Amino acid sequence: MAKTLIEEGYRVTLPPEVQPLMPIGTPLQITIDKAGRIILIPEDKVQAVLLNTFGMWANRQDLPADGLAYMDEVRAGQRLDQMELNIDEAN
Figure 1: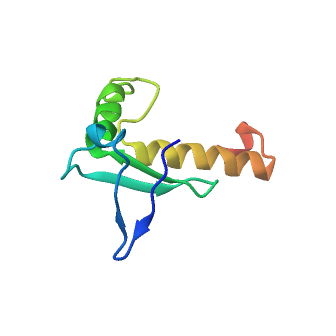
Figure 2: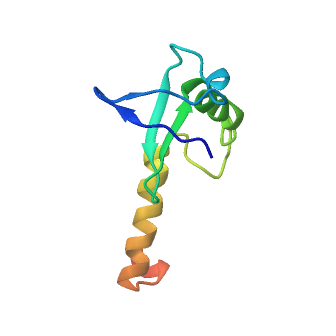
């Protein structure tokens, strides 16, 4: 595992073995995992993953086209389950 320090002004110098993967000027997504490690992900990698899954749920007849409407349906079903109503009672 490569190690580095956060310098004054929150500057991070990448170790030489990592530098070819993230050239100067690369836009990064930054997060910290549960173990406290800083995770740097190039934005183009994030976009590549999103493009791989794009359309995966398109044209599904069993799901609403609007994701918010779908989540409202899911939540409504959960609320009915929590109320212990039969489906006939809810209609």
